[in-house]
Length: 223
Ligand SMILES: NC(=O)c1ccc[n+]([C@@H]2O[C@H](COP(=O)([O-])OP(=O)(O)OC[C@H]3O[C@@H](n4cnc5c(N)ncnc54)[C@H](O)[C@@H]3O)[C@@H](O)[C@H]2O)c1
Image 1 (cartoon, rainbow, N blue to C red):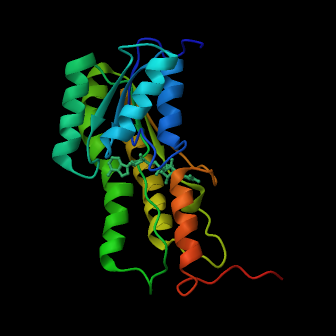
Image 2: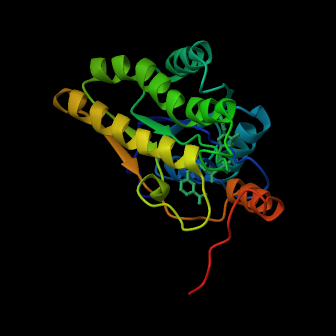
C-alpha cells in the first residue's frame, strides 16, 4: 500500500457487483482503500455495497469504508448519498461514477422505455452525482471525477447491437469533456475511462441474453 490516497475521501457509485464475482466498482473501491482513502461505497443493492465494505475491512481495517444504498438515477437519493458522506467525513475528493447497465438491441428492436432506462442509469446518474458533488469540490478548491465510459462509446462490434449502451457511453464522454472544461480552472479534474471487455457479472448477464436471443441479433459472420 503506497498511501497515495491518504486522507482522501472517495465516493464510489456502483461499488458492488451485480452478481457473484468482481465488478469494476468493487475493484475500484478496494483499490482506493488499499491506497489509503476512506471509501463511501454506494450501490442500488445494499448487500452488494456491504460485501465490498466487508472485503475492505478484512484487508485494510475498520472505519475505512461505509456502505450506502442509493439509486444513482434519482435526485433525492443522490443528494442523500452526498449529505451522509459529508456528515461522516466532511469532504469528497474523488467521485467515481461507475454505474452502468447493458442492453441489447438496435433501433428497430429497442423499446422507447428501454432507451430511457439505459440513459437514466448510464447518463442521468453521472449528471446528478456531479450536480451534488461539484459545489463541495469547488469549495475545497480541488477534486477529481472519474466517469466510467466504455470502448463501446467509440466502437461498435460487427453483427451485434447495443445501441442504447453505445449511445449512452458516447454521452458520458461528452458530459465528461463539458464538466472538465467548465471546472478545470477551479482545480477539479473530470476524466472518462474507456475500458474494453472485462469478465464481470454485467458481461455474464449480457452473454446469457445474447445466447437466448438469436432472433433479434445477427451473429458476426466470418469472411
Ligand atoms: N465489464 C465490462 O466489460 C465493461 C467494459 C467497459 C465499461 N464497463 C463499465 O463499467 C461499469 C461497471 O460495470 P461492471 O461490468 O463492473 O458491472 P456490474 O453490473 O458488476 O456493476 C455495476 C454495479 O452498479 C450497480 N448499479 C446499477 N444501477 C445502479 C443505480 N441506478 N444506482 C446505484 N447503483 C447501481 C449494480 O448494482 C452493480 O453493483 C459500467 O459503467 C460499465 O458500463 C464495463
